[in-house]
Length: 425
Image 1 (spheres, rainbow, N blue to C red):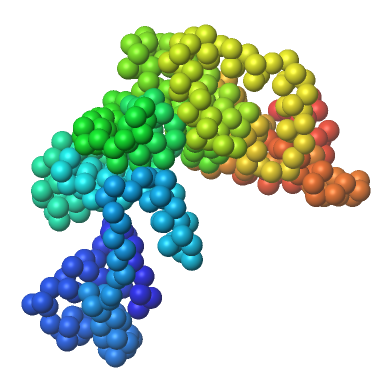
Image 2 (cartoon, helix red, strand yellow; image 1 turned 180 degrees about the vertical axis):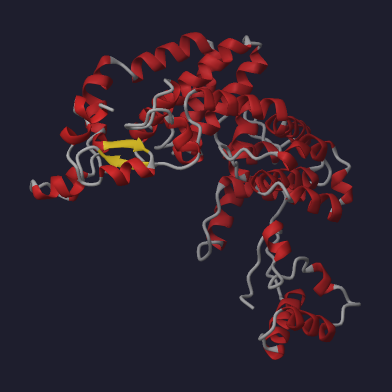
């Protein structure tokens, strides 16, 4: 009735307003008359005419004309990219990840069509585990591949800390496997670009697809994925709401996979990934020009070694000047999603702190289940003191607390609930 498409999930399966499998509509043996009658019987009050018109419109997709521009096979990637951008100038801007995905999908010679499915299916399944059974039922050919076996663990996964998009998956797989950070380089390599001779070679296409396939499988590996999530959680980031930078999370996974390939001991991997992730979140390392920074970091890690490079960068970024000057300035904000406030919450989780005025409930439990952000100095109190919104909502005035404690405190100023007498039984 709303003419809307969605990815199949358990909620849709239970809702009779949805047609769960549109393939049935395009089946030539399907009677549209019977389909409309059956739908209206399940959805009382709907108009037969309106349902019929909607389904006819859907069926009409098969008759739509699609424009086709054919490009010469010997065009360089920069020219192809420019053509894509000009043709798509009135549509949604395409990213290098979009170019890469299209390049992967059309190459059947080296299994690109199956690889494209693997990337899409994994990302869908990470959000909706029930999508596993749908793939198993409707795509038996893919269900027999190594990709499907590798991602099968997702059908029982309830972790929501890291839900990668296809761009995230491509970025991690590419950078960890190819030691490069720019996705335009991936497009070029999948096209056969030899960066030294500036020529295009079939052998490079084959080796690039083989490498990318390996990188994607490493990304999907249950052990790698879960151990990485465990490391991030051990740094105090226990809730999806605490992850403000997806690129920081992506590079942390790149670093994890890279250090494993280098043979770094597990305990050291955990320490480096934790420290690097917290530093990059706190300083916004991947918020400006992420691809440039990712490309630089991965090259330097291989050139200098992780110990020297990580120690130098972290000491430089988190110097005394940062703690004494940059950090206090960063705290001059009323934005609760500030990375500074998120890292503060993570530190409380790491230290196993109790919620504000809580006797037993920890900050971790509050962030994972339900919490309030309480103003230490109540808003009304500060308003009456003449302070504006930007001042009374400063993040330094925020604490994580239980809802009932927040309600009980209300507009009381701190001297009433923070005095020694407030805790006398």
